[in-house]
Image (cartoon, rainbow over all chains, first blue to last red; front, side, top):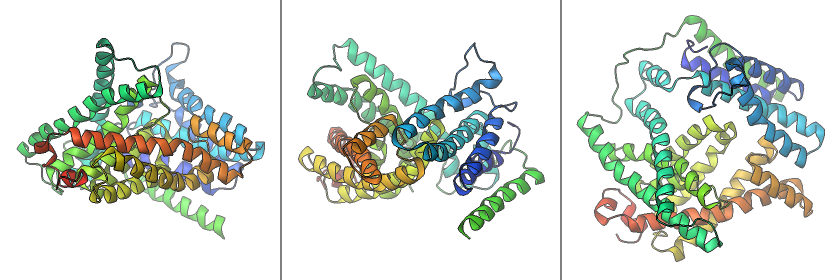
Length: 235
Length: 189
């Protein structure tokens, strides 16, 4: 699965939830959910960048499957709380398809391959930079947020007590994080300018993922399938 | 788009997602997931804000797929924050908080149809529980869904606006002046 072109993986992950919503419930949702869940069991669907983690009590091949089930389970509980059984099944199957598809996508799609694919397709370097820089900035800032929380606690900040006290604590935690991040914009700007980055410029892809004819046909086929299902549903 | 604004976008997305650690520490019923969108808009205008909002939704989708349809809300937030910045509503907490409350109403009106028709009002545990409370109070299904969204969005957006106003005032003037809209947003230009 990991060797497939990133656009093919995206197309499959987008088509399954779309079909789940387009096809009549519950049959359509059940069929798409079975396909999505079977994808989570395919070789190559490993924990990946989403950080799904590995439990010793589960075989590695089942980690993605388990993550999909555990992510979807609360929705069924909330649906049962708010709706009758028929509606719960109809919406639950659709949401579960969406969850399973995206959990599978997060496990098999390597961000660097996606960036290479967009660059090879001729997208501007701006789009590639935004995607790659965002994915790398999020864990860095999350780690910094945790360090700030620990540092403020060491200084005696109490995040508990009255609501007013909690808001004061929130200010003391959020402000250093946001201000330090904004100062980082200067450093990033200098780094990008010194590398000659210009908005709209094109980059040469070093290792473009192979895009086979079969995969292109599959992508167009999925699009046509979704459109046909939509037309039939509306007719 | 200038390189500075390009560098701002990933940082603003990361701010939105990293603030959850601060919220978890103080255990308040807030999301603050639009902070980056509002901050980027107040600094650089709605185009940058929309880019931040769309990217925030895309990255959040990898964690929880139900976030993606709410990208519309992020775009509305960016447009509203752009209006607020041009009207200098970030000049003090007295103007920022009511503006945030206004955004809370708009955001809940926007998110309710998505939440109701796509997810049956089960996007997060908190919203599902407040929707159940609205149902128990005798509200019709769509009304209960709006109640759930309103309860979660109303206070959250006011706090987010207050936080962004505080950040803008805490920024050194020289740093703020490097962004096209920052000084106007706080009424200093």
